[in-house]
Image 1 (cartoon, rainbow, N blue to C red):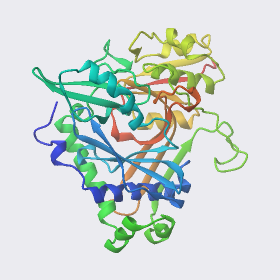
Image 2: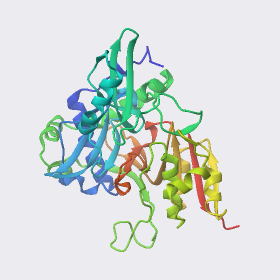
Image 3: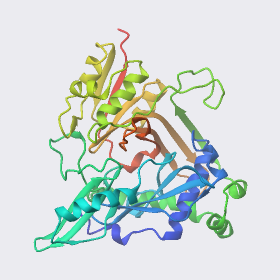
Length: 402
């Protein structure tokens, strides 16, 4: 429900501050040596972000591309409003395979036909079910305002509600409207502490952050220091650190082959880790899939798909500490969030010595969204702030040694 006490529209972050948050996020990632992000300081944060709206119409995120010349390292996602609770929401590694302008061009003729006779408003890039993005078309008419949402990658029509309760699949919900006043108050307190990091930087150096063409020029001057840094990403070989030439990683991203196959693709990733190879269509029935998605508890399917060789269980009370413990045991797992399923294969715990002395807790997420016609190009890998979104459940899987 919309908030009267803490409306997001009254708590938007200023444009210059958005850029500072994005740049500081890149610098902190490099200082912490987060896998996949260490080299980003060789480039720069590009100043024209892509704005992503909530389906309630308010700005939700700003995505800043980071790169060097024509090379794109990835995107830093920054909160649009302080009610989200943090400056940097997540960091996505690599280039994106979807194109918003192309999606709008392809969808507009279809929408004009469906909404003929109504006053069509400019389309918006929206987060229709975190972190999934879509194109939202709105139109005014005699019966009020109507809207249609399509996935920005697959161009599939997105239902406004789930076909069944407790489903992980494909439907729209508002991130802002899901936050209660109690949530917002807690997140505002957290943001104020994180904001101390930014305003604690000397004004002269903050000006350099705004004008630097390459971040290497300010890394040493900023001198970001950590009190504690515990970072782990799944490695098949544990005899070498992840930076060593002989180290390798065996957890592989799989994109969802259908819009509501997020749980199916997540299961496929985890089965592949344990060397069980199944197609997504083979996996779907075992997870209880029906059009719209899968039930949240998919643990029986993990067992049946491996002839009970994997022991699998469902946890409806997920915590960051439980996630950490699974990765320390070298066990990737499914993490459920409202309407969506993803795989987790790493974590980081960072306690900083500067500013407010905040603690960053993140998960290394293998997200089966977005869909792509080339299955090898689907999905995304992201370092994500733990406190950003409600974690609804985990599904664990490990070799049964009994």
